[in-house]
Length: 362
Image (cartoon, rainbow, N blue to C red; front, top):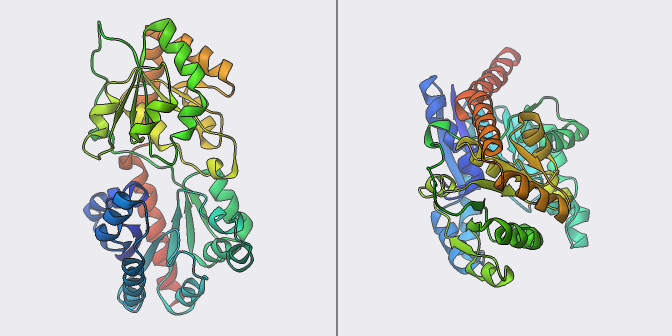
């Protein structure tokens, strides 16, 4: 089986790395050949991350290279698309692929349809509001990271929808380091675009740190967040793929605060799975897939209001046994479900079915 993977980013892009690229070595062991062609390359991402702006000329180059890649699709048995072929362009290419190319599957780990149907620009809403629905409808299978995304695919008329959670490689994650004698740590891993959720629960963080002598560690936030968390002992570390595992092992509680909005419902709870993989208890907002992960696996506490966040911190910071029990339950859930070792079999089954069905029809 030879598959063309049209990723959105190179390995530097978290969504591409987690949803698809981490599976490739495991798929290759099963005899699947995967050829990766990213839309946005390292040069594009380096410019974006350093300046915060999208490089126009490099974007044009990347789009042209993607179109060139589309001309080669006939040599593959199947096409694996991350989200869409060309962002902010109509679904013309996906329609042509449906008619003249090998079958394609499409993968979503985020509610990117809201880029279009909830855009602040009326022209985008009018011309592209239903774009992702068209892509989903033309795909042979839609792979969704959670039920919210799957529901959208089914409503769009997708023929086959399979939920595959965003997972970790369990072998990369080690148990929490022994922190006996050290202050307890509340931790968060994310990006500058989501650090606002941490700021929103600052009063609960402040009260927890004051009462228990705890401190807060953040990975991936901007250094400026310290000014937004006055009175809280905060340490901010830059994100790195190699450093995230060691960072998480220093935590006593991992958090994922959110607001209950349409974008947030599309999130796949990856940071929760990371905490769980190292046996760290979690506290999370009861939004979207967080409810399924936390309540379904009894690995932590759901907290909505500031009072509930403060109560959750008090329960966990004041009870070592409860932290350990939640942590063990989380690690067990990762080993049974939220690891690439388990979900790769699901992907292989999807790909085999799609290719087999295509061969029968031809």
